[in-house]
Amino acid sequence: MKNLILLGILTLFVLSTNAQRPNIVLIISDDHSYQTISAYGSKFMQTPNIDRIAKNGVRFDKAYVTNSICGPSRAVILTGKYSHKNGFKDNANSSFDGSQNTFIKELTNTGYQTAWIGKWHLQTNPQGFSYWQVLPGQGSYFNPDFLLMNGERKQVEGYVADVVEDAAEKWLNERDTSQPFCLVIGHKNTHRTWMPDIKDLRMFNQTTIPLPANFYDSYETRAAAAVQDMTIDKTMRMGYDLKMFENKEEESKELSIKRMTSTQRQAYMAFYDSVNLDLKSKNLSGKALIEWKYQRYMQDYLATAASLDRNIGRTLDYLDKHQLSNNTIVIYVSDQGFYMGEHGWFDKRFMYEESFRTPMVMRYPGVIKSGTINDQMVMNLDLGPTLLDAAGIKVPSDMQGKSFLPLVKGTFKKGRNAMYYHYYENGEHAVSPHFGISTGRYKLIRFYTRVSGWELFDLEKDPSEMTNIYGQKGFEKITANLKKQLAELIDQYEDLEASTIMKAGN
Ligand code: CA
Image (cartoon, rainbow, N blue to C red; front, side, top):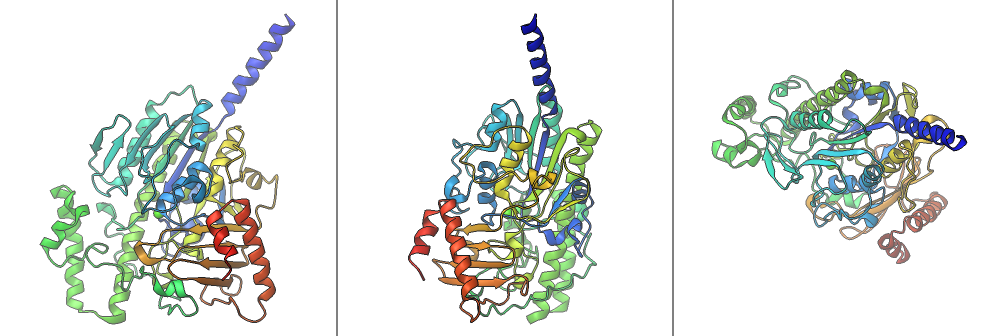
């Protein structure tokens, strides 16, 4: 009898813990900058749905990535490990080893229904999910193909953010409701070539975007910044990027346009053709042309972000409508930040703030207070451990990230005191590989391979990172301390390549 009562209590306990295991929706966008999110005070546009998550939970003001580029960032999120540990170092030569452990596998193995729907970009097929449906490679903005679990490749008509959300809702409708779920929605927006939905084409067409103060950066004191190939002036293409085709023949060669239905293409090109006509009548050159390109880039980017935000709203509405909001963690994060013309750039990769930092907001009803603002340094590395922590699963000891739940619950006030970064790709956009440390106040970067040398920035006095003060008088002690801290982080994370470069000296 006594045993029976004990068993009863135990069963009740297990049932009640199970009932409390939160569902998880992790929304990962691509190249979406904090500069264009109204929760972060954007002067460019409103993002009411991302703001909804922040308002009902926490806005992270110091969320950063370990390697600012698409595939590697997703691999870091999945594994909770730096690129040198998970093996996916760059988009050019890496292929994700799906046999390794991920936070998803830990959730699937403990009874979660897990799914990844949308942009994946890790070369190999997903492993360890209950369900997946992913865009091949970068995916397409219009009528995207999907790779399915059964090996099929299926094209779905429509705009990518809409059809990814449709597929996510379909999976939610059909899931096994006796188990908690973890759904990852991978959005292609706002990746290059910033193709807005047809209904959003004119959304920002009349808006004049202010130029960033350092738009005409001359890159003095910064050798790697001087040799990059990611400027709006020289790198951004009139046809491919801005849809200003020379003629119908050039337009027809563009795969992203070619795959549209004739109705879509007609509506799409009616807009761009009229812009093109206007541009030709202006006969611009020099700075006037560069600034025209900047306006068009930003107008398309913002309109592409509008569709992203609207579909995030659909996800939140779905959770509300199905009474899931109270027991579901929602996290919105970009795979990295992006340049909105700062330093004259688009793209990412650098350890400079705009691409190193990423927007991240999270809500967790009953656990995180509405309107929380967190100013501690957290990284995409921490997402997996955080979600395992929330699900009551022990974080595997070889995951290098740390749960930030104690920071947002207020159990701990202070997070890490420095962040380690390592970027590897030495190809497209000509950004030199580099690694470095940021303490929030100072940032020390070591470039190697393409250019070789150190950069030091005082982020308080020079938040736009325009003046490299490495080697300047008066910073000897600060530099020595940062190098020591950097060496310690390299040892802690066991980055042998960086360790070898450090030991070789200058
Ligand atoms: Ca990206």
